[in-house]
Length: 386
Image 1 (cartoon, one colour):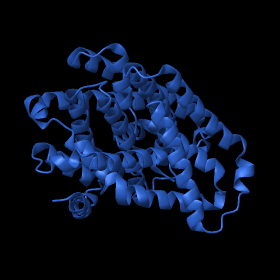
Image 2 (cartoon, helix red, strand yellow):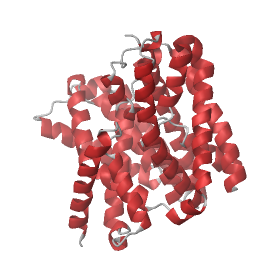
Image 3 (spheres, helix red, strand yellow):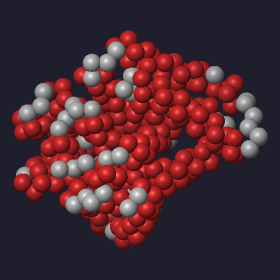
């Protein structure tokens, strides 16, 4: 089988399996991760999944997903109830970071810096998975729905900081040119500030058609990625590219750009990225130590529930706080991307990488189902009222 037929097979399997997953409120794109997990067990296409061409396509999926994180970063949501949101973000992230660091350090024997970075990476939230459920149960404009979205937005800022730390750590560990790394990061910051400071001038730039506007967006995307590559900072560069596009594109065109990039990302590159993620796991290790998966799930879920209950019980009530903790337990693209970035650059091994990806799979099935059931049961709670 050649690369093109392999991609065609991945797409049709993802499409068909995704239809089944959506019936249990799991995003269809998650089917691609399951395809990768199957390939981790038995992979007759190793020559394809380890080829430079396939890895480049998969990395583009990672970069486009991060671009969307930056593009959809909405600081206005932080201004609404910002005290509660900031307090919740700090409490939840700190609790999971602390407990997770202890697990990574003592169980997997990593240093405290790497342990903290790994723990914080899987402490981040994949609120995008819950948005369809919030819409379905008409919770998007309730106190609970806005809390989840607001905390998810604040969490995005933490993700940017984590990628910055990971970039510095990878750069230091690779023995690369320190001046080149600093110069690359500095150029990314200058480019982002430039688009922010001159956004009015940029928005006056006229585009002959929608196609030329999208071409301009891709120009910004690849410029940032290219500059970031010099400093081992391409993931961070992708987020900053998204932020820059949001400032430089006319407001009336933002929804179009969002739809086009999502179509390109999820329709082409993201499935290949998730297959790549799953195929990189060490399934034999997971079968040998299944309790490690349960340990990571228990620590992560426990920390989220504890932090949410501490900060949210007065604002949302007891049941609302529990639902908040359950909703925030789901992990999606960005947390997986950070772990993959650390794994690809030799900062962490295949053991902890496999455990974290496997625990993410568990969360994908548990959280949407449990959240849907409890939100229906507790629908009379004030936090769930519009």
